[in-house]
Length: 165
Image (cartoon, rainbow, N blue to C red; front, side):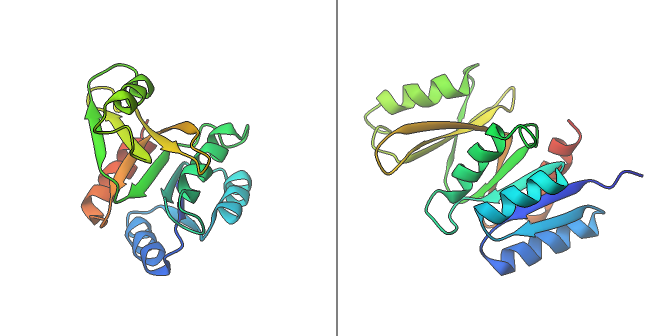
């Protein structure tokens, strides 16, 4: 049997331990990291079947930056990414999630938001539109979002869904 490997990245040891315990109880092999640099090295060495990333670690958007690094890395680019966040996720039925994020940026209600998380309710495509410190808008496609505080049942549901693809 091929054991599925999951990389969990968070600077909170309690969250790492809780997620690890839940995932290991379901038969997954769990690798953990506390920051972007450590996580990228592990991902390149182990090539997990899924990466679960916290957003705020050493820096405010370190998880987003790590997701972008993984996507742009030739070895890691196909690893599904699940963002673990307390930021509200907006839903859309528009085919292009990125175009919808850019459209939200034009709406006065959302224009000043530093981060917009979007997920297509039909296709499941998801992504992050965030502004860097210098105001540049960055788009990072991800596989999904896991709401904080973590619901163990939802965690397993999301993991099984993403790993089976």
